[in-house]
Length: 173
Image 1: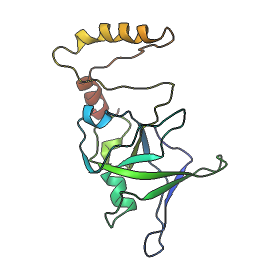
Image 2: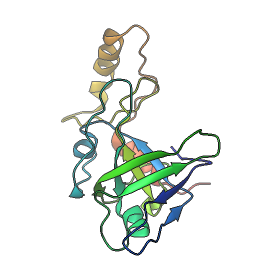
Image 3: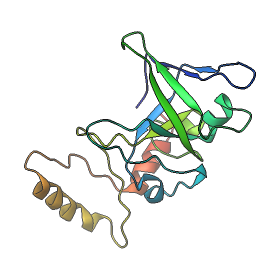
């Protein structure tokens, strides 16, 4: 996801300086996202899972974003405000972790700032599963399990991870 129309601002640092960023990628994730995606958290921890219908204000950022907004290396515990003229008030986030870049689609060569948030909200959600053996054999079982959870749930698109990453990293034409 891209946060179009939203800019971000850090709280003032010790010298009173704030830093701004106008583009970042937002990756909605669940509690085991970094483990499954094999993305080690290099500082801090993963966000706590939200409770109720409200998303958590805790985020993890990639190193690119951490270096750009907190060049002193103090990203953990830092606050970040999302400012959007269409929103009545700014939303604030607390950085609880830093990860290396990921090789996923919509994150251009991992050189863009990215924040990860455990949204844990209903809607169109993507999941990453790691399986042993033939991943193609899991697809039928996965569709059956999803359908068994809810008659309105639908596994629309199932992609094998290697194919997904290969396609995401392929040059655009």
